[in-house]
Every structure is written in structure tokens, then in C-alpha cells.
Length: 142
Image (cartoon, rainbow, N blue to C red; front, side, top):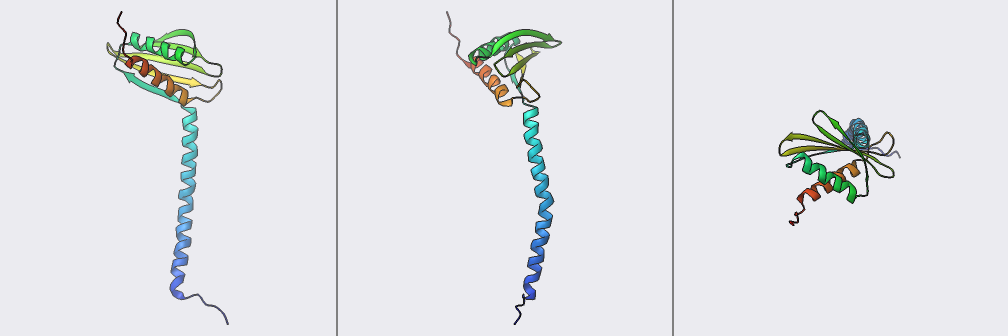
């Protein structure tokens, strides 16, 4: 005796196939988006922050942050609207751009490369965080 599938169950089976077929392109596009996001994070690991402090104060705090992290200062540079601090650790090159937005606001851009094509966003973020920490530390009056 042959086993027959009830006719009432056939639409559910077909609907399931259609749902799976429709989900496959969505799953592939989501996987592609995740992969491109991961590549984007490693290729564009640049950290930005605007501080309510004059450029000279942010520069001094940036230098202290680099020193606290054991990142060796190399040189200064300049561009039309500000200054660049070049530094290096054993496996990273660091560029800290400081741009005076006004007398009391400074934009900081930190770019950290691993010596090759890729950026290190985590280190760039930490340099910004340490600079903020130095700026927020209470000053000792002499």
C-alpha cells in the first residue's frame, strides 16, 4: 500500500521551499555586507574626536598620551589648518592630525597603520581615549 501525502500539506511544503529560496539571496547579501563591513573597519581604522580645548592643550595631551602608551614621538608636521604629530611603536606608525576649529575647539584625527596596507582602529581609538583622559585629569597647581 502506498503512503499518500495529504493534499492539505502540499502548500505548506511548497511555501517552505519558496521561503527558503527567497531567503537564500538575502542570506548571501547579509554575509557579503558583513564581510565588506569587516574589511571596511580594517581598511579605514581612523578615529576622530573634537575637543573643547585650544590646539596647544590638545597637542600637549596627545604627546602625553603617546608617551603613556609607549609610542615614540618622531616628528612634527603641519598643514593649512593645523599640525601633525608623527610617532611610531615597534609595529605601528601613528599620525595625529590636530586642526583648530576655533580658539577653543580642536579636531583630532588619529590614523594608525600596521606597517602595511591595513589600519589599526583599536589603537587609534585608544590614543583618542588616552588624550581625553589627560585633558580631563585635574591639574595640579604649584
